[in-house]
Length: 231
Image (cartoon, rainbow, N blue to C red; front, side, top):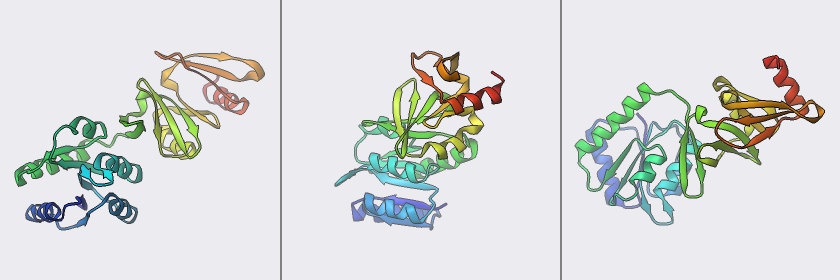
């Protein structure tokens, strides 16, 4: 297991590394800032990141979000002297939340949970953000995807949230989850469609279950959709 540990306090960083060594983990990269962590993840593939939340200049919560952008399958355990951030930590998809000072037994339990999670779940999750909130969305929770420059907007029951990937790249990942491209700017989840209406120039207008949004296809998108589904 390759582990990234991030803490701006040298003593805390050293203590955590010793605990991990005692538990038998040797493949460890330690950094003392969010900048160092982002540089490390560009050059390495980590199984686990242990992040301090309260660091000068950058929140560990924000760093967890950024790390997930660079490597979506990284497991995250937060460590902090305070417990008020727990809810946000788990919104980001953290596996564990350790309040300092924690014991080696508590650390071991959190790492064992990481191992169990990696064995039991290979489902796609998309880490998106809106304001200060983070969402870990399953594809089936998404109604449609809208392109927005180099990012996309994901429409779920929670509203719109941003995901840092081009729509053409995300399209490849969502094909297996019944998403289809009906416009250069839109992917839709066919399992969320409520009604399809033919409009001018043979385009299609889609409405969705439980929300009032309507999306219009392009002419080419409508032609491809009709061919694929014999509409």
